[in-house]
Image 1: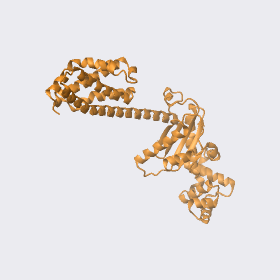
Image 2: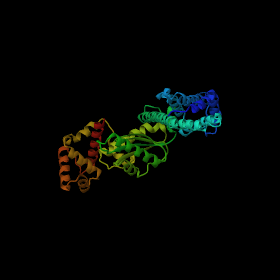
Image 3: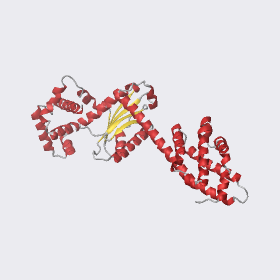
Image 4: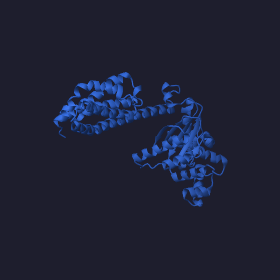
Length: 394
């Protein structure tokens, strides 16, 4: 838009007042904004004032020499927005400084205008209002990008600390762990999801966000979670038990059945061991065909004991070698044990006739020598399944 000579002349009269105007904005006009007074003096007198000077001179250039205004003219505004984001200044405060700056510049133009220059003022107001959205858009975009990058960096650091603590790579007394808020008792969870392996990355991310939200709401605190497509590990930084319906809540949020193993700890020094125990509980429930749900150590105490490796472990695991090539027999055995050796419940779970279950169990007994009708045989079968699973998982 071509400006009249009167408008350009009016704007030029503000040129000698640029420094004064910048100081007045930085020290007076912005002081009424909530939170601005807390900024350091050097930020106000140097960075804010310099940004105001740049903004006023950019406006004057748009008026006097619009063809010389370069596409990168908002670069300083972007740099300042990134700095303010890094320092933690609220976005609303940052944007309000630009709105106040616009108004202060308008006041300066109005102050130097004389009678009969109302039309020139209207022209300059058009320039101000046309340029302001581009500046504010650049500032908001850069601020949000910087905050997003900073938050992603913080999340990555927290995840690294949580992973290090769970894996025993970060000692419990490490100074960085103060960021996690782990001071007293905590709850450690291991999660297993029977998710669709063909699910796309976007769907996975959405599900993990829903699971995180469900965990946070359940425990009333932001839990420290390392979640992946098929499960993960969680630290709840407070002394509270896992609710009995936790697996159901997570299944509802995630859309798949969820196995949850829960172990309580007395302090950060026990987190690593608790994570190992929770992971082992999860493995045992899968190996034994125990239905998805919430599981504690007491729920699988015998199975946990039987699955501990010893000098005879390989011999016990080898008892099932004769049927290792028959996955349907191993699955029948696993399901039969999980259903308390109820042949009809086993048949229903597998979609088989009870006689088929009987035939498969008899075949297992004939080929392995394990008497599944005797308590000792049942214990041997459980131990063999668990130990074979441990070898496969290692």
